[in-house]
Length: 350
Ligand code: FNR
Image 1 (cartoon, rainbow, N blue to C red):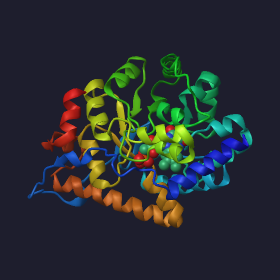
Image 2 (cartoon, protein in one colour):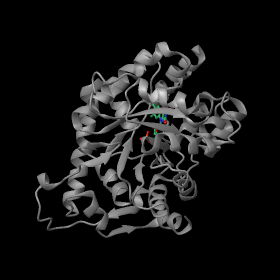
Image 3 (tube, rainbow, N blue to C red):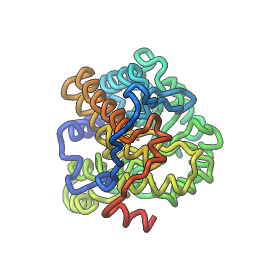
Image 4 (cartoon, protein in one colour):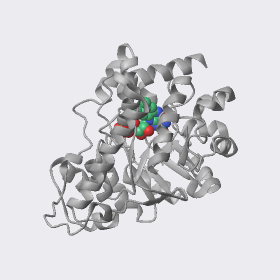
């Protein structure tokens, strides 16, 4: 258990200051061009970003995706970012609750309801821990923090780069099916930066999953984080795979085409601003998701710095809607857009 806690803190240190977003990795959002409308014929205050999610109504289509928990330092991150989400009407997810599943005394570091009583809140557990916990165990983790839903994370790429990681990925769909049957639309399935593609998404939806976060390539690379901790051959293989994954733009556009409009889709993985948020929404996401930028701002300057970073994102998102002449995300999606370069190739194949 102490090794789990030490690993978690090493992860936070690496994410706070390390080179965990390899420069050559790309979301391919630079290949998406929204088209300027010189005559918007609307006011900024006409923009309506409100969005339903997990049975609640968000003021903006943004999710602070699950990052942390289990230590005091992690608890401070959760509380600052949950409070921020509460103030601005966003959704918020805690990180993997594995530590609290193994040691209930660590539960306090995931508890945010006192600072974020109405926020749309997601719990979090890894698929292969969920196998061990069973449906009741997973539901208990969600209920213990008063969450509205539970994120189930997939991270085969990270596990294979982690010396102590899993090496057997069988039996996943069976657990997903059980969880989807028991939890219905409170379940969300997410990747962790390598992307969910259309084939996996289609299968998940067939099994009853109603919320998917594609979490694609182009932002935080968990293969890279593990590679920075690994030594010898493991580190070399990690280096080779630190650009592995489906770019976020390719994942979200192809998954939306594969699953139809009723599935709630989140696009995270390298989404870094309001304009990029607008792009993923235009490509079919219901929510844009972000982890690293808000975490880093919080680590550098606490809640005020995270709030400043969020304001830049929200202002940019509103501006993108105005400059495309869109009052809502639904209108933004109907506007024409240009897709160029490598993204065009990806979308031809997916
Ligand atoms: C994460 N991420 C993550 N995901 C998850 O499902 N459970 C977890 O415990 C964590 N832990 C975690 C810690 C930190 C510090 C970061 C930065 C990220 C992954 C995260 O939710 C997201 O899917 C990816 O990081 C991609 O988004 P960004 O970081 O590129 O915006």
